[in-house]
View 1 (cartoon, rainbow, N blue to C red):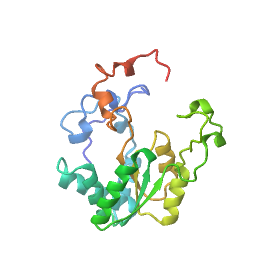
View 2: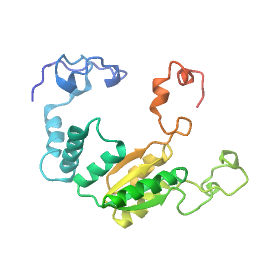
View 3: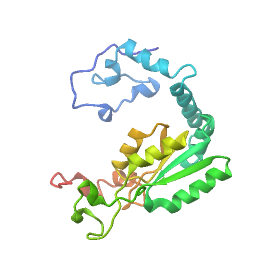
View 4: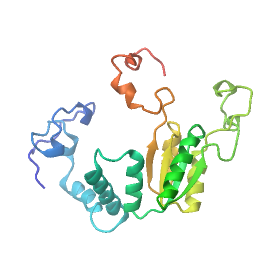
Length: 226
């Protein structure tokens, strides 16, 4: 492996890849910054990780499938099509859909697309089990409609249901922040995301980044207590 820099990163835990303007790790056409965390990785540790991408184990097959989809279809396919292409390359037929109740129509559409393309989809809604939020200590004031039944999101049960179904690839469709994390933690199958929920920006969270110095300048307000 060609390592153009022998410099070790400075002890700067406050500096990370987001501060880098060289991006030499991508094509090695420049140099690595002094604080590059990658340059601080021991060769043995790096080789150990790279070895997991080689051979016929699950991690290796997944990495090659992802690279193949990127290499063949970069800028050509939609995310929906990329999920299909990836699933086919890892040999996944049973596709679990972990969906938000607010995006069930999108889930129905995607399920139809999966069936049309020869896959077997199975969806589990976030409100599975239908347990009121107060059962886990959430106050009425935190409900969208206080003093009425409002089921809690149940990502752990979603994962368990899909685990029992023996899904071969799970797709997140609009789960809430945090609920998606719990689902991924408890899913036995690989998890990829089709839709990231953002109710304000029509499920396009990147728009807040692109407009952080204009329309959504409030995200830079230090005094906001979120």
